[in-house]
Image (cartoon, rainbow, N blue to C red; front, side, top):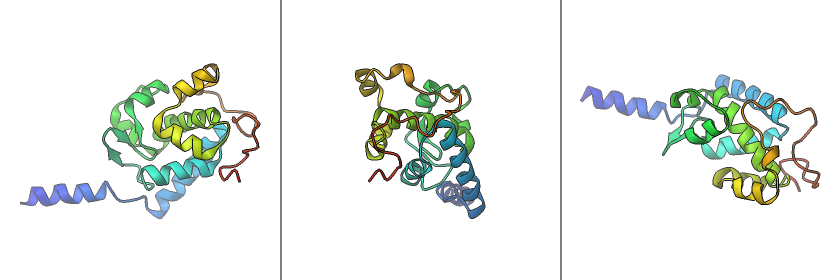
Length: 160
């Protein structure tokens, strides 16, 4: 009986969103990764809110952490650690943000399309557009310009 209670409490703890202190740390990490990959912070926040509700320990059907990245996807982005490592907020952002940056680039800077490509994959569209050689990984150097998206008039995540 006690073991069931402990398991239930552990399950509830893993579904709780970040505390105010953790949220401030997440916000700082988001700003850092957004700048490094040239995408709007608001776009990253949109994905985090949608995917995990700011819970760095979220895990659902093989999707892990803040941005619910899959282990195989993270490995494709350069991750070489254990599955559990993706539950660390910084590690998760290190590999999920460049994936989102690629979706944003392939979308031509359209944030709604970038969200759809993040969820469903962008490889074939990137290939069709001849963008495969421009895709980023977790080890990519920080961008030196404001945005990685082509000049399309979509300068911000709101884009309207």
